Image (cartoon, rainbow, N blue to C red):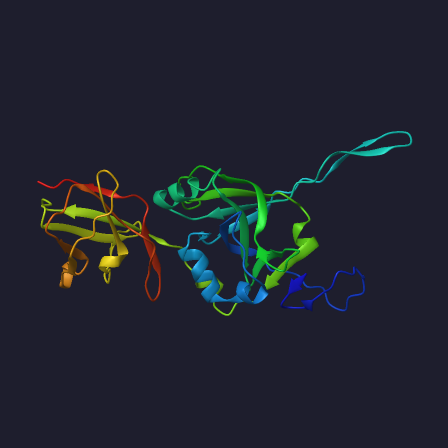
Length: 292
């Protein structure tokens, strides 16, 4: 058990306590792949380790939580004359409401029934909740379900547009058995996910030139500062083809990238996860282009 507010305990389960370590509500969270873990508590606190996991897409930072409520169900029992038998296990869950637009709702939907089956929760006072494993590594709490609700449309003098997500924990007592609540070396509540890039082919591609415009986010903001190694250019058959050079425009066209080559073939263009100083970006889908 690790708790940066109260210290670390051993395997004994004594009950004396001068102070109870109560966590604040979850106000944000990250989903993680089942194979992902942090090497130890120090790595769990480290922005460097979090950046590495995020860039590898082993963890995905989700949207802030506007409202939450418990989705717990207590166990049920058969009560007989001399017997008391548990007939249904307890269920522990959390319903979180996000205020978000349609494109962000679509992103949430893509994580239902996905390989992202664990959750790290970020508390109101900036702590991170995970679970210490027997080998000292830290993983997220395992989820049995991650269920994304429909978009609740806004109404006059009512609530804004929102969506409620239900997270059901695989083990209701996982945090009690090995909870790790740490204070990171960075502001986790300002930590953002990877922004989606949209690439738009402009003009007519040729064997010597390909021009694309890069924007990001639902608002299609201009994305500048990309380098040739940030792009993945493939032929229609899926073979790699690397243009000789790329140059960015200026002014309003600073997000317009011109690739120069001698034998460019029809195919697709995308990006890997691009890490810049303040944020990370990636294309969700490759864009096709046809050379004439």
